[in-house]
Length: 154
Image 1 (tube, rainbow, N blue to C red):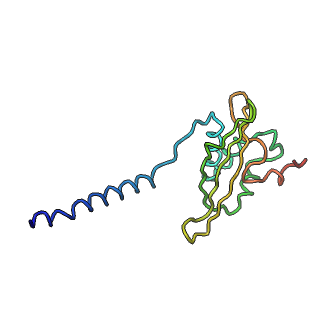
Image 2: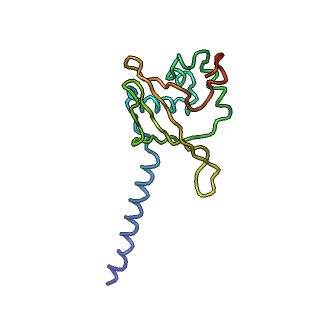
Image 3: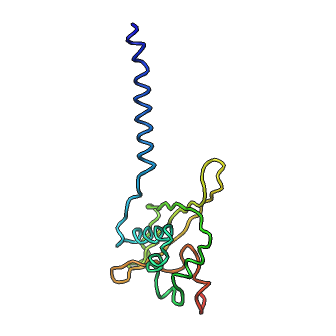
């Protein structure tokens, strides 16, 4: 009978170890890389470039006609003191507006999270346009800066 009492603790330890291992794997996994030749992949690449402070790469994914008179430095200066963010794609909200335009909604989470964190959430909308096989973000997209650099306004 003493053998059974000594081995009783093994199963909780094994289960606890498995749960901790799964949590570590889930927290350290990289986000799925979407096809950059799709509207949602374009938005992902844009937000990754913003998060990496690669404003040249981010600006290259914006519609040059809509952002005429703007450049990557305008985008960078608008970011100012940027805070960390996480973007979550709303797959169910993606809507094809026309053959060339697609609406891509994203939930943006800024700052720290947790029960008493100073973070906040906002929904951002991206309209992505097909320019002969290459998708670009059209219209005013987060972070909003076009009004600050365009000579003609909206």
